Length: 469
Image (tube, rainbow, N blue to C red; front, side, top):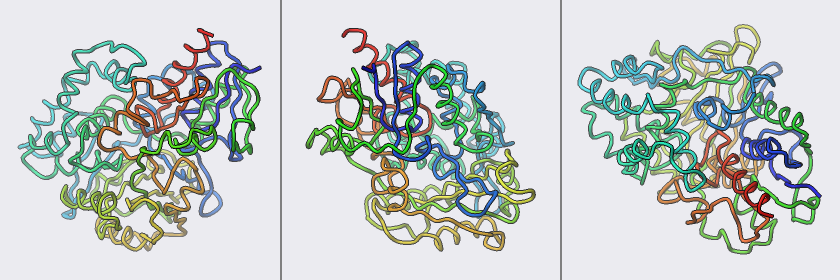
């Protein structure tokens, strides 16, 4: 009998399997697709030689993850490549605010009236970032805080809505960039704890940047899988699990799946019936005949580029997708251009480019034209660079990754109490009604992103039970 079986080979499932194997438990991992990866994959979606990331592409949370930083992933081929700027936010007048590794450069891009306010916001936390990140990403009760005072100070700033936090800024440039940071998790700007979301992304950039993985996000998943095999674990792909009886006998079963899928497989009925899924996204992967022709020079050297004219436009786009049940007229876009740091992603002189906008959950329309109108506002002539495009709306994204219910790449709404307390209101979010069954997906704390911490935290709950029994 195995000690543990893990279902789902996304970053969290892989991390949970590795953490258990590192502690001497026998582990087998089962994945429905023909390769491991989940939200960290790389595929030729458009033309031969163009290597696209179907989901996550830039990795501020991965490079700062306490779980990943404790693993020898570089030994298995993972290389982080850093663009000159982690992120830029261009404006219609051809200028841009930036999120730089340097706090000073970032503050200066906001203008003199907000430079000091930004410094006062982030600089107190940077010297203690590693401890803060571990404490924040280990909540709820998987570990006692190492620095409860700093965590409490962070909570006082971050638990209120982001719109409260940005009142300290006098000009729109800082408000707009910060609103874009919050929108990465598709949370309404006025929601609970959205200030913490923006702060985490900003601090992550200042601490270690927003890099891409050399060759694509698949390198993260492949490194985890290779390490797992070296530890004695086994990986089985093309293996769809429809019920618990499909799996070999084990002392524990760990699911990197949506709560909906887990309830169906394990027979939990309506145990997760109150779990909410959030807005979907419409994503386009481009093969380009050259770099994106941004008007703002800063955007040409940034790995990630946010597109939204101001905080009101960003807020309206989020409300349309999450509350009004319609696609926004002017979608807020998150875009990534890996080629500014990694020329191996496309043939010489060519580029891959990645963009998505928010739409209602399960939306079946086509956002291509609205997204490209937005891109043309900030990069005139963009359409002339397009060699090929691969589009994926909510139905296609859900078919590609079953955890993206209705196209929700966060695997559950990141709003209200569900931002922190997911998938249920519980101090033990990784356990389930069955004492031998656990959940470790992005539907558990600390939530969405390629960081492996949900898997790491769930593995703690599993090995504690295994040792007791």
